[in-house]
Image (tube, helix red, strand yellow):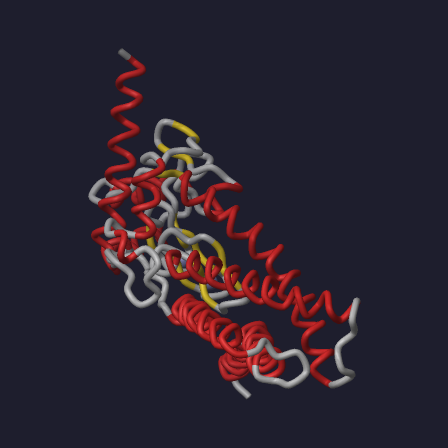
Length: 314
Ligand SMILES: [Zn+2]
Ligand SMILES: [Zn+2]
C-alpha cells in the first residue's frame, strides 16, 4: 500500500479515537438522566411526591437542556483560523525557501509583517511563523498539533469536547462549565436527602438504591472538579488571558507583558460574552465572533498599553 494511503488510514483511526472521551461524557449524561428522572423522581423507591417532584423535574430539565446545548456548541463550533492575508504568497514561499540563513528569512518575514496587524514576537524577538501552515501567526494565535491548524486566541485543545477551545467558542466553553456545574450541584443538592435516608432509615432494597447512591457520589465529585476549572477560567476572563498565555506571557515589541491584552475587568468580560446582557447566558447566539472583532480587540489592547507606557514615560 502507498505510504500516503496508510497515513490517511492512521489519521482516520486517530480521528475516531478522539471521539472516545466525548462518547464517555455522553454515556454518563444519559445515565444521569435515567437515574435522576426515572429512578429518583418517578421511581417508587424514594420518589419526591406531588408538587415537589414536578418542581424537581421542571428545574432539572431546564438546566439539562442548557448544559447539553452549551456542550454541543462547544464541540461543533468551528475554531477561527487566520485570514488568508497571513498566509505566505507563492512568490514569498519561494523566496523563503531559497534563503537558508535564519536572519535573511526573518528579513523577508519582517517585510511581510509590516502590512499586517501583528504586535507580538517570539521570545528571541523574531516574527512568529508557523512552518506547518506556512503563515505569519496573528497575535494570540497558536498551532494546534491535534487539529493541525493555527487557531485564533487558542486557549487549549480539550479532549472532552474533541475541539480546540479558542476565540470562536470560548463563550460556549464558559457556559458549558457554568451549566454543567449547575447541573451537578442541583443533582447533589436534591439527591442529598435520599443519600442521608440510605444511611439512616434505609431505603427499600431495590435497584434504585445503587443509582441514587452512585448519582450522589459522581455529581458531587464532578462538582468539585468543574468548580475549580470554572473559577480558574473566570480568573482568566477577568485578566484577558488564555491558558497558554497564563503559562507563558506574550512577548511584545517592548518586551514580555502578562497583562498585554487586558482592558480592565468590564471590557475583558464583554470581549468574551458580548456587550448585551441578554446574550451573556445565551447558548444559541455568539455575538461578534468574526475576524474584524478579533483584530479590533487586539488593536484596542495594544493602543491602550502604548498610551499607558507613554504616560509612564512622561
Ligand atoms: Zn499552524
Ligand atoms: Zn485543536
